[in-house]
Length: 70
Image 1 (cartoon, one colour):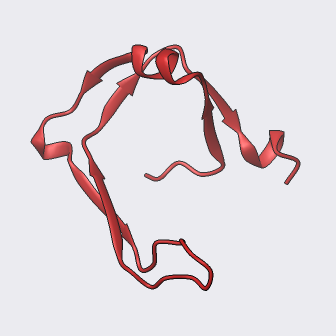
Image 2 (cartoon, rainbow, N blue to C red; image 1 turned 45 degrees about the horizontal axis):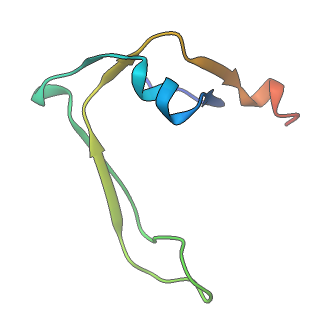
Image 3 (cartoon, one colour; image 1 turned 180 degrees about the vertical axis):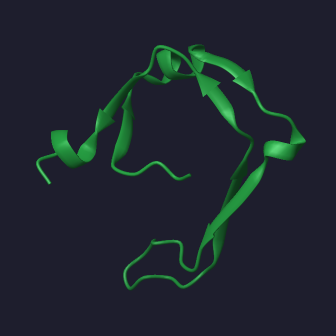
């Protein structure tokens, strides 16, 4: 299922250096949104991002629901 109230904390080089495995084509998922969230006034342009599953080791994961003061 989908993870909620989570964020990771790392520098870019530490984050990508902790990549231990990348899933195959069967794990690739496309996600999207109806607007890109840019400009003033806001632009309405559909956007999408896709990626395979990935395993990262040794990255600090935050519970934003608890640690973010929400």
